[in-house]
Amino acid sequence: MMLAKRNFYGEIAIGILAILIIFSLMPSSINADTTEFQKVDQNKIPDELAMLATVTKNNYEKIKTWQGKISFEDMIIYRGSYAAELVKLSAGVTIEEPNELAAIAEGTRDFKIDLERNILFKSMNRPKPMEYINLDTGLHYTPLSSSYETKKITDKDYEIESSPYTFKKDGTITGWLAEKKRRYPEQDIEESDPRFCFSIGKMPWVLLPMMSEGVRRYNKDPNGTDANGRPNSAFSNVILEKAQTEKGAIYRVLINSTFEMKYTFEEKSGFNPTHIESKNTKGIKISEGDTDWVKIQDIFLPAEQQVTQYDGKDGRLRRQVKSIFSDMQVNMALPENTFSINNLGLKNGDKFVDKIESKEYKYQDANLVPIEDISAPAGGKKETTVAEPNK
Image (cartoon, rainbow, N blue to C red; front, side, top):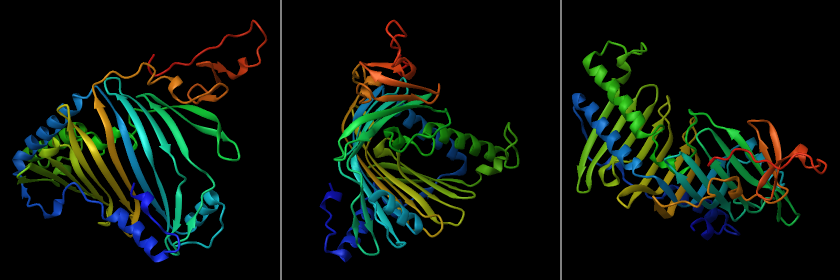
């Protein structure tokens, strides 16, 4: 792993430079700015956008189940008083207000998804402590915590997450806590969900048809409105560009209204998004992402993704995350207990909190026992279970 190869100790200047180089020189899937693009005729834009939506949707719908592993490297840069407070809380060190502090983590996520039922299981393991580096001085702060892991089941209506809750002085885990929370249909896909790689804010087959229909209405009646009274002119700023390369066509969608969005779709990647870029109202780039794709069993899946975020005030680097996919399989049978509470790492005596029903349980012999039943006399209430995602 790249992060494991860094050596800051005793080499302050080299250490600072290494951090910045590691996260700034990672290759992108394409360099869209040097590819020769031509504008697509305004009247052809709706059909071309509809085509991209159809192709990406057809690819995605081939996936019934999907499993694999993601190796990730995550760096967040904190500045000012918040950085000093973070070091105090995480490393027990009180320092003067630093200019920049880098918090760095690496680990793996194992995932299993049943796309037909829209349900995900993932297990995250961060085997080493977070690293905190003062970018002004090169000082490395040792965190109070050690390794970390968590397990999560995400259903369309709710999610259940478990993580270590109690520890011995040496860091050994002595208990886990699981919490069940409600999810709402409008909630975005989390970036730790592998399906995030397919998204461009919304899935392409959701967003692109909306754009296609909007441009179609604008071409027909620039001064008109849609059924909800929204002006067709809102789609006057949608530009579609196309380049033809040896590896196939590349499309770039540009939207420039109150802020600027840029999406790139490549034929060699099944027209899945390979580059996304956004700027705020000041023209400052606030985020960009690059995704490489691989074909497995005639299905395009993400192979590597890098997402970078910038400060909206001055454009300085805020965060960079790199994810590498491996051990991927599609359309295989998943283990029966994949989406069960028994796959959350709970041991006898661990706590389960249902925040939807405002109830608490203890995990005991693969069952959830209501807290009020723990001390019930003989012949009292029996053990019960709460509804699980796969029931």
